[in-house]
Length: 152
Image (cartoon, rainbow, N blue to C red):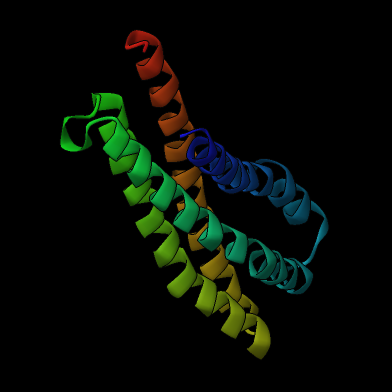
């Protein structure tokens, strides 16, 4: 159980921590100091390095989470665990959409130097990552509050 919990929490740290850094630190600085061609090229490169880590995190979160959920009783697991599963699945679907739709558009736009289309794709990615960041932080809060209310 401890190994699965370590994998689970480490993967959450990579994913949610990466979104927090990108959204709260990198995004405002990049928007303030870079012109669209450089900013969009930067983001395409950053996502190209970060998204493989997110995919690995998604797999590890899902596998470790489902294993631990089974240990907690499967469908009769505590409500906080079922809520974590539901929110996690929503986050994974949002990430998959980001990866397969606006991120692809961003890469194509940067390759074609279509800065307007790239800006539109980046704006969509920004909104969806903001939503996922909020869901990730909410999930963390629910788990810790739920575990505190149901010790054991």
